[in-house]
Length: 110
Image (cartoon, rainbow, N blue to C red; front, side, top):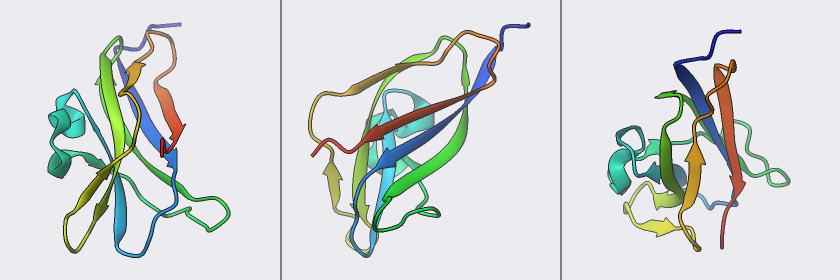
């Protein structure tokens, strides 16, 4: 196989939200807003249900081997108030492999 030079990375997080709340992924690279909450990558609640509260989005095309830190945030779409998930920053390295897609998934750190 040919090693992929870029990988389409998608994101998914299990997090319960309230009316008017959205979820974004914010991180240390430009594609994720360089830690600026207003510039994070917004996720979608298209498949969200009360029993399976999944927010997802992507893909974001990133160079293979790119390492970055990230966190999920909740934001209020009316007031723009932001809530960061707790805990340490998450780490991810885009795989260097034949795969051209990758999924980064997690559960909200309360």
